[in-house]
Image: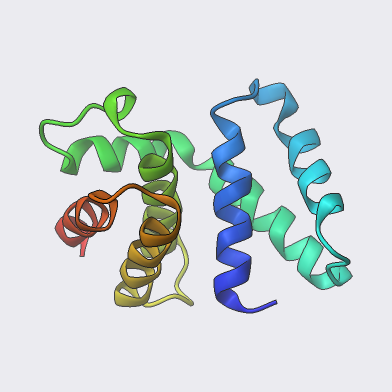
Length: 131
């Protein structure tokens, strides 16, 4: 799997978070990983660890997003945009292996693929405030 494919899978797994109870998150993650077409054991382990790492920091991540998204409450943001922002903020703040510019660019690419017409510019604007 490429880094972009891994990022997309993490995005999809995180997107499920808003539709399930916290107690079901690990089960949902396992179900998703099992649905993938034969990920290697290393890929499956990486996906699971990354998802869990982000899920553990969601309160901090949401606080960061809320502080820079003036005029936008988290519950008013589209679920796709919020999920992309959560992933990007995690990469920008907690993953030293991913340069900030790469995290922003990849978030914009996810927004182009999964978001609405205004999503790429919205995502870019919020993340630029964190850069």
